[in-house]
Image (tube, rainbow over all chains, first blue to last red; front, side, top):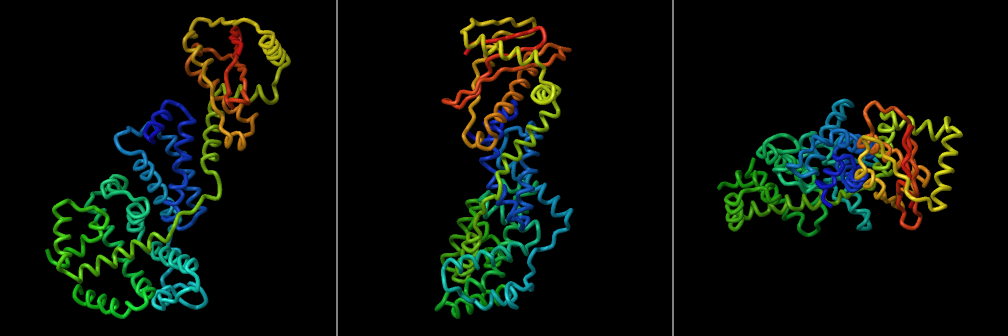
Length: 209
Length: 203
């Protein structure tokens, strides 16, 4: 049964249909909110608030678009309100210590590798998390929706109530910033090609600058 | 198209967010521009890196908590829900207990259908309600326990009765009789009574 069918049943008062729907999307919602808020406990609370709100305003879902777009719009608004209330600052500054006395910038530049692949992946994930976290709220939101939730620009524009052009521009800026933050780390990992690629990158930066 | 313009739409190119004409322009440009190809490669690698930040599992079953809140709000918000709570807690009157005992005794003895809907209770609707079986899945049973499952579905059925069949200005308390079938794991309404009405149907 599709999400939209379940929603229709929920609108007719079938609580179980709503329960199926909520269970189907709770993990997706928590991950979206975790990436946006940067805190799993906050994400779980916001997920609960989102599901309750969806139930309360279920009659407002008219079935014209996808249920998930409507769901993400509600979740995004609640998350934005929450961050506004707590006046969220980026959880991790690029200059803040990551471990020992090294800063994130040092970490990117050092290109240090862990002995095991698993540890390396964890470190990379940590870098990514910090880089995404350092983005402005509206850039972080579009990256999460486009990259992690795999939504197209039209859907994101509907969710954020802005134009497709605005979405395209925000994604471009956010990705450019992430590339900037993560490129040295990527290059540091690629032995052999490092010097050549760094040179290419500098050439590009020089041309574009 | 110049490199500076191409660079601005490379992200959308990777995300498949360009119109056909633009997409073609970028493809043609990349064929002869090695610098933009390197830029595309770097963006693509950035995307790969983003993938390393995987999903997490919630530490609790959020849906169960949400359903409990909804159920509580519905129970608190419904006069019948309050009546049901009173019935199941402090005010369990002897007459009601006796009524249930008699009802089950009658069912066990194979009593024929007693069906006396008063004016305002559609027989077809009641039939539908009696025929319905509410499945209780294992996870739900584990979380709620069989007694709570019965209570949960009981409140839902009382609400359904109230919404669909209750006469205007009828404030009488309702007692409903549910049967939980362990084999099929379903709950079925087998009888229901209110002041002046008794509707019983054998299984």
